[in-house]
Image: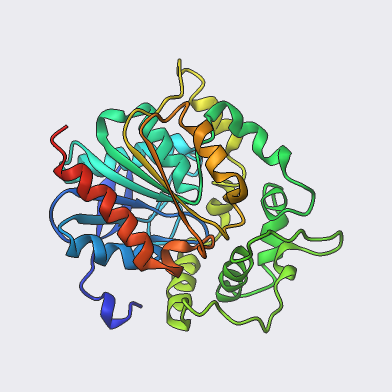
Length: 321
C-alpha cells in the first residue's frame, strides 16, 4: 500500500480503551502525537512524521477510532471527549506521561479537549486550520451555516451516505480534496449534492499524487464513511454536553495556531482579530499565517508548516522555564 519512501515508518496496533488503535510512528525522543481531520488519516502527516523524526522527536500518528485501520467496536463512543480519552489511552499504552499534540481540522477540537480536561498530559498544542471555539458554542455551529454548505448537508443522516454511494471510494476522496482546496466554499443548490460541486474531470492538486489518493482510498475502503460522518459532522451537541461540567474553558498550555490564508474554513480575513479573542481563553497563544496555504496546508506546503512546528517545539523543548 505504501510507497517505498514511506517504508521506514513503523506501523503497530495498540490496545487502547478496548479497541486496536493503528498508529504510524518514526523516530525517538520527545513524543509528538499527530491528530488528523477529514478526509484525512494518519497518512496526511507523512511529511511531518519524517521531519519530526529527523529533528529528534518521536512522531506518532494514529488513526482515530472508526477511521482507516483503527477498529470501532463501540460506535456509540462518538464525541470529541471519547477521542481525547483514546489519545490519553495511547499515551498510557506507550508509557508516556506528557506529549506535544499537533492537530488539524476536527482533530483541533480533540486537542482542545485534551488541553481542557487533561492539561497534565499535554506539553503544548499546535493547531492547524482551526482557531479556538469554546465548547458551549459547539452546538450552535451547524445552525450558523448557510443552506447548501457541505457540513450542514452532511449533518443530515443518510444524505452524504446517498451522495457518496454514487461513486467509488477513490472518487469520493478525490472530489472532497478538490472541493476543500477552495478558498471560498461553494454551496450546493437545490437539486444538487455536495460532490456534484466538483467536475468529474477536475485534476488532483499538484501536491497530491495518484499514489497518495490510492493510499487514502484503501484506508477509507477499510473503514467506510459511516463513523466519519457521525464524527465530526453530527457530534456537536453531545460533544458540548460531555464538557458541560467544566467551570471554565481556558487552555493554559502553550498553543501555536497555523492558519493558511486561503483555507475556506479558517475565517482568515479576520484571523488577527480572532487571535486576540482566542487569547482570552488561551493566554499562551501564538499565530502564524501562511499566505498561500489552503485547507490542506501541511500537505500542500510541508516545508513551511514543518518549520513552524519545529521552531515552536524545539524552543519549548530547550526552554528552562
